[in-house]
Amino acid sequence: MNPLLESVQNFTFLYPFVMAFVWIAGGLLFYWRRESFLAGPDTAPDLPSTPSMSVLVPCYNEEALVAETIGELDKLRYPDFEIIAINDGSRDRTGERLEALRLQYPRLRVVHQAQNRGKALALRTGALVARSEFLVCIDGDAILAPYSLHWLMRELLLRGNVGAVTGNPRIRNRATLLGRLQVGEFSSIVGLIKRAQMVYGRVFTVSGVVCAFRKRALADVGYWDPRQQTEDIDITWALQLGGWRVRYAPNALCWILMPETLAGLWKQRVRWAVGGAQVFYKNAPRLFRPAGFAMWGILADYLLSVLWALSFAGLCALWVLQISTGPEIDFGLPGPLPTLAGLLMSGVFLLQSVVSLGIDRRIEPGVLRQFIWLIWYPLAYWMLSAATSVVGFLQVTFGAKRRAGTWVSPDRGVGS
Image 1 (spheres, rainbow, N blue to C red):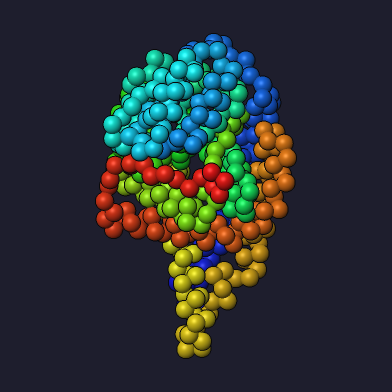
Image 2 (image 1 turned 90 degrees about the vertical axis):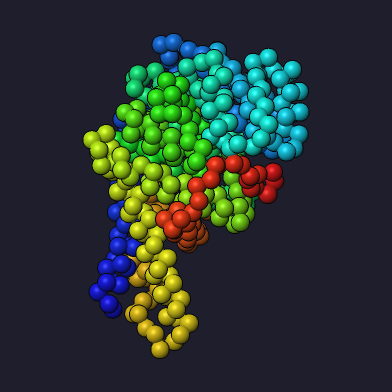
């Protein structure tokens, strides 16, 4: 085998293999140091005070789901909060539904924008009219657990330099294989990585579906950038480069709807990849100044993950070419990965899944049952992850136009 090709193949195996142990070690350390002693998410933590909070709900074409979201928000146990729904130029009856809900729920305020200007500007509008210094941003289809605001505020009050606290999204729709795979993904991948990143110093991104902010921190970095496809990644990097800390509150549960079709999942993941690449190029110059040195760990992992995606996609393409041409072209590839290496990688991923699901049993009893569906994750999601990462990164690298992050109606599962 060509030495260069062999090196690429070895890297494609070693990167996820090594990083799995990095995430496992960091996740377990976070659990032992910061989480194991906590009460469950269905219990309120002891707070030194309960400052008022403003819950921002940007909405675009949410007529079918917004009533449920607002109704559940009104049931939250936090003693002092307001709800601000921002109707971002919806084309359906979202505006009418919100006006009817405003009469039903006294703590609800509604802001109407004439045109669809995107989630970033909708959030900025909500932040500017909010009465509180502490903001919680959720999506128009999300449902917060009763004590989520308490757990988010707990992190905000720990230190004055905490600019944002990301909550813990959990999947509501579990009727299909894709839905069940995402239940495991948000635990074994998203949740574990956020725990580990907290231990190692910096967080790649808050969860856009549930995150709390200190308004002063947002004002300090200029609020959300409407030019970015993923406002959550962008604001996370902006805050950390501006000297603010980002924390993770695993007890701040938020139940969300996710795509359950391949087309919807592809569209979502390409948008995430485009957003990550945009944020990288936007902030690259700042990363080589003193304030950016602390972000180098996150930067290295991001660049290595993109390189892995390119390597994996390239090996798959060469393997397909090899088997389709017969003996005429032989790269010496038994497959995208050697058989033994592939088995080892899958075994390590399943170990990572057991650890993360075991940790999450504290906040979602019974989640360990989702382990059986994760057997399919390496086959289905690694290929999807590699493909969307390559497509998104190349789109931005080779001139994808920066456009305002206007909304389209997302795929929220077969039952939505």
